[in-house]
Length: 209
Image 1 (tube, helix red, strand yellow):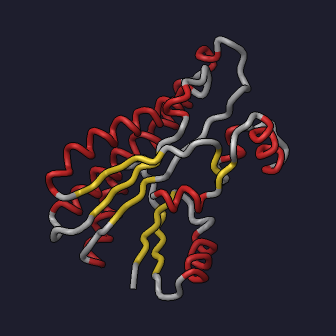
Image 2 (cartoon, helix red, strand yellow; image 1 turned 90 degrees about the vertical axis):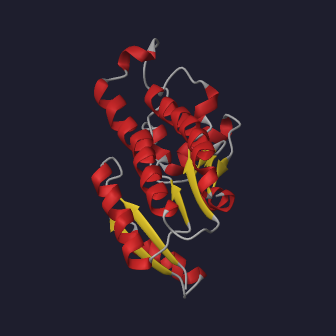
């Protein structure tokens, strides 16, 4: 049976995740662990524990992220970008991707040859050059660049590394964070759709991964 190991900084959605996977495939085991991806030691221990218990790691998807509210600040918006916001977002969106990717390569390179794959999730924000949300956009642009470089680096050892940058807006718990003034998720969706942006479901991104 397949084993899916999931990490999040909070355990709020663990039970619902296990239930949804069970409804799709009852033979799939889901193991959930509270991990702060902004901590390299926590990430390293999590990956070490996975390989120690299951003796393998076929694939990994690094999707943790922090959003940033848009359209809330007067121009020039760069003046409102605080050290705290910049550091907090970079620690998860960029440092976390680096820590996870590195730990996954450490695990995979010493395992028997196989079709091993790592996928990092960036964003269309990496390419849209919006004059706002500087930390978020920069972190996603750096994620895409980092992923391409690592892909070239580890391909000779049999590990594929790719980046997915969802276009439009993805309907995840992060969505309301982009529009803090919206009163409901439906209002957020309506706002983006009025701007010609599509709202895609997590399953759409998952199929691409």
